[in-house]
Amino acid sequence: MAIDNDAGRCVSADIAAGISPAAALFHSLADENRLRIVARLARGEARVVDLVGELGLAQSTVSKHLACLRDCDLVDYRAEGRQSFYSLTRPELMDLLASAEHLLAATGHAVVLCPVHDTQHGAVDARRALQAELEHDLEHLDQQTGEREGKPVS
Image (cartoon, rainbow, N blue to C red):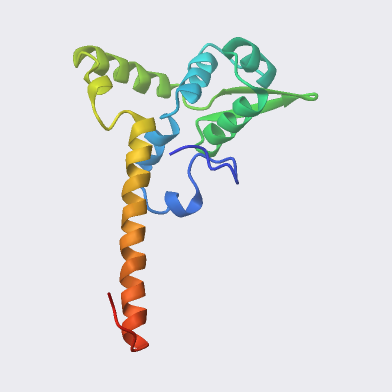
């Protein structure tokens, strides 16, 4: 899942209610830019302006990803005057990411070849499947409505 643009959160409340904490954690790390931010913060705290300059991302992008990571309690900030300094709240997160890198090295990065991995195409396929399901449901509702109103059903 991507950031919920309405709330700036990683996972909307509706979706969060139905997924396990492990899935939510891995979802929060599923974005490459969030991983880059986490990796940078592993080296020490940083301001949004620092992350923008070092990672080459837009300020709004960095802010939204930081909000996501804060919602997941993986990142927090401390205020100093008018500046906010962001840091990791859970240093063991880097152990998890190191284990993931070790696993990727051991599997020959097979995940790259996984057909589900391609999120752009995966999202398109998922959208098509949902659209087909919606069209089927609408057709079924039309049939039910026609039967109730005594209209012939084609």
